[in-house]
Amino acid sequence: MEFISWIALIILAGALGVLFVQALSIHPLKMSYYIIATCAVLFLIVALLSQSFEKSALIIAMLVVLGMFVVGNLSMTKIILSRDDSRPVPELTREPGDPGLGHTAVVYFTHGEPETYNPIGWINQFNEFDEQGIPFIPMIARPFFFNALRNKYLEVGASGHRKMHHQMIGKLEEAFRAEGDTTTKFYLSFLDDNPRPDAAAIQALNEGASRIIVAEVFLTISNHTAEGEHQIEELNIEERFGIPVEYTGPLYDSETLKSMFVSRANANLGNSDKTKVGILLVGHGQPDEWDVEWPTETEHEIGFRNDVLALLAEDGYKSENLALAWMEFKEPKPAEQIEIFLKNGIEKLMFFSAAISADAIHSQYDIPELVYKAEFPEGFPVIDLGAWNDDPTVIQAIKEKIDALMALDS
Image 1: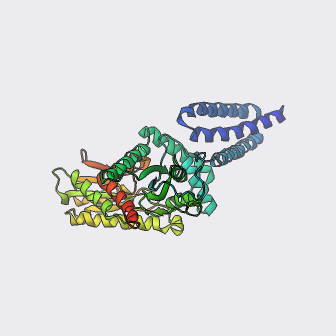
Image 2: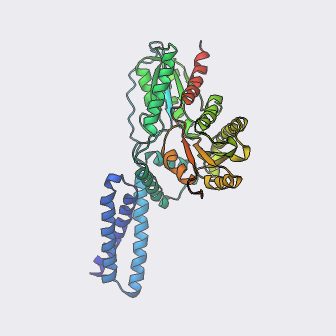
Image 3: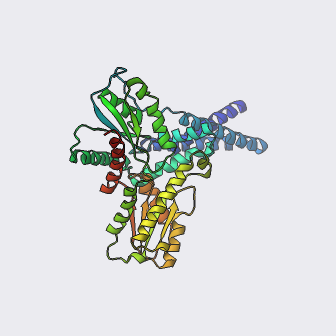
């Protein structure tokens, strides 16, 4: 009987670790089942400990429970992290050497974020950093990270990222059509959503494109842009079909995009005195360890936002009420800088999710949450100027990058 109790305890403790991870990370529609199952198994373990073990045996049994819980936890976490990125890639049906139909295809490539909770993007990120030996969140803590991500989705309802980029590519195409370009075709693609950039490139090839321009709708050169370029380059398009594939590069050097921040701030100024307005540009941020691998990520974020601050100062805003902050990994955080603004006597605060191309969990939840950690006076006006989104100036900035490549062949 004692042997059976030990076996049952080992099995239940391992199962508890597995169920606990699932309860933390599963899709919201299924999480209640796993929460109930986790509680039920925990009850059985407590009952078994109280009825079958005493004194020193009880202490050993509790240590066994802890050990098997960790084993179950880590095993399930590794299973989740080994999940395949099953996004479909269409069959390439075009014959090698086929020059195509003569038109240009623009593959609009951006970060992407699932509309509802799906951790696959972060699973890919975790695995990438593990392969590169870049430290980021211990294995046993990763389910809690997924849980925090899920809670953000539950808080905001859904990410507007995908919908907004659909609007942006639609307006980009309208801008080309308005100038008389009736032949260039446009294909949306995402690093962490469907379709992938290589899938969009294959579709463009299958539809007869004779030139491919990849519009990189990112702020910085980073592992994100590199991964998209890698996916497309693996298709060997130039070698197989003899057609060029060109990349616009991200938008950190776009003077047009920088000007958007000034015009949007002015549009939301109202009757306020510019010298009494604080403006905070919140960047994304990455760990210092990542800067070794991708220094351009931080360099471009800082340089771009400093240029925007200079433009705001030229436009009449007070330099001491203009600042940078970071969402994560770097300092200062928004609340810290806002406290300085308030001591300066500002009467209104505006803040941008300065590195986010379109509505996303970061701009819908993370950055506003950090801003509102500051201690504002009651009724103090705070204006969230959000991500870039489909502002006409943003669309123009993306278009200018594409136009610059098209002009090289004209």
